[in-house]
Every structure is written in structure tokens, then in C-alpha cells.
Length: 129
Image (cartoon, rainbow, N blue to C red):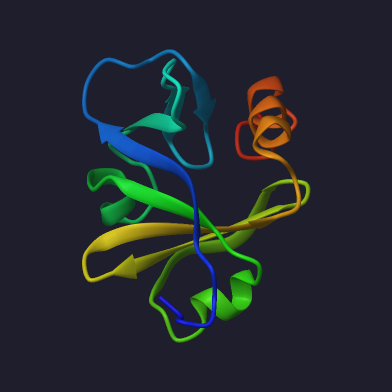
């Protein structure tokens, strides 16, 4: 965590090992994602056995934060995913923070725009190969 950057909570991602075959499927990531219906932004992730994602992403819950400068936020960190742009204007990277995956996001999109684009298939992560 860089003291000169602000980290604003975005969402919580929780890996699950059974059920959850609904939601959006990403062939690239080998995972299903479903949004929790509650008031807070929580996503459930179920990974296929051969998912190419880092084992920490597949097994440990992650917290996601919005930052103003993604490249600065990941400088000198152990990057375990990305950076990449799963939705136009929405840049993501994940780092290993002492055994905990932390997702860092840089975007000017509102939360409503992000979730609408993700659910409608506008994002590249959930498009068929």
C-alpha cells in the first residue's frame, strides 16, 4: 500500500468450491462469477480445476480497491494478474499482499456503469473465445 495513494473500497470477491454454476462464465479465466443480491458489492467466484489464474485468486477471498493511478499502485508489488482491461475504461491488476490477493482498479466509470457493462456482456472477460 502506497501512503501517497488513496484506496477506495470497490467490492469483495469470494471463491467457492461447489455449486454456483449460474452467473457469468469466463472461458479465459476458467471461472463462473455471480453477484450477491445484497446491498454491498460482493461477487462469488467458482473456478474450474484447470483455471489458469493464480492459486491465491482461486482460493483466498480478495478485496478490490479503486485507485487513481494503477501503475503507481502496483509499482514494486508482486503482480499476480494483469494489468488488463476487462471492460473499456476499467483497468485491473491483482497483487499478492503477504498471501492475500488484492485487486486494484483504475476507472472513471461509475459502479452502476461497471456492473451494467459486466452483466450485459460488454466486457471482454466474459465473452466467448
